[in-house]
Length: 180
Image (cartoon, rainbow, N blue to C red; front, side):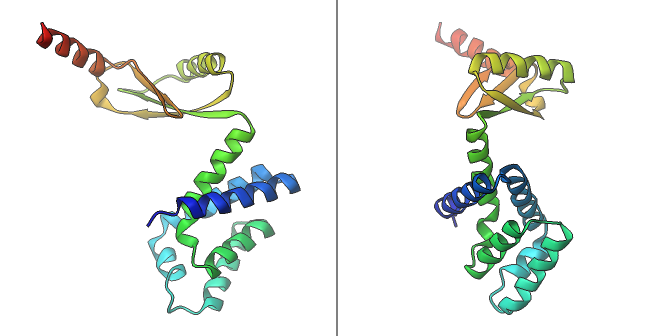
């Protein structure tokens, strides 16, 4: 089931509350942490999503988890509201939507850099600086490794992909040879 439209509404509401209260960064982090907890534990999901478990028991569990994680009242109340409305399954998408809104608000773009092997911190810092210069935005870089690239780097920012991998160059070379 897709929760994208529901998640956009909740994400926007949480974003607005965070902006109004000046707690946007902390709130986004807490929602992300709650989402990670929910996603990581199948047992937790089974309990929280089970309609046969009394609502009071689910709410007590959420309050305890929120207390242990030192979540703010806003985050705890958000989780309780999602549980009451049977929308906890949307939490990972809500966290994603909220992160997108925070990034837009702070003029941050997320770049995924994929290489065949490890890249040094110095290289990633230089790449980040060049991407920031090219886009005029702050860049948050995530590095992934994919040995199938053979060599080179593929960088994705939003929906733009810059493919400098040897795999792609060899594929293009092969296609050109086959056409002639």
